[in-house]
Image 1 (cartoon, one colour):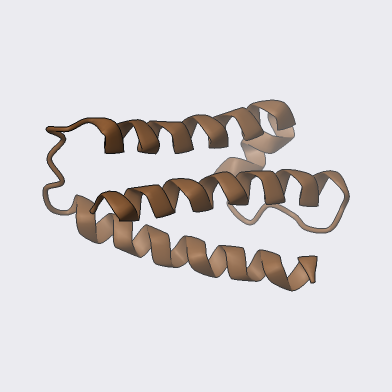
Image 2 (cartoon, rainbow, N blue to C red; image 1 turned 45 degrees about the vertical axis):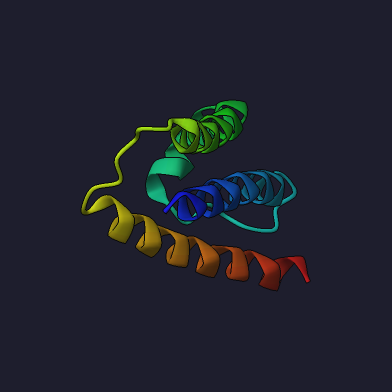
Length: 95
């Protein structure tokens, strides 16, 4: 279960940087309306929020007695799969 959190945190971090620079240079638009609002309000805060959320997941991994009860494993797996698709979409405009 911890590897899913690490994978999800890594993808979130990668997505944050790719999205930030993609929007800054006019390659893409943010597809998530909530994150688009955050980005349009303050682009640096958008990036800091993505970094903070990733570090929160990494911190949860380090807590030894943290219990991964249902539905956390299932939701984490679904989120990881969706983020993998998002990164794949990013790769289409990068290359």
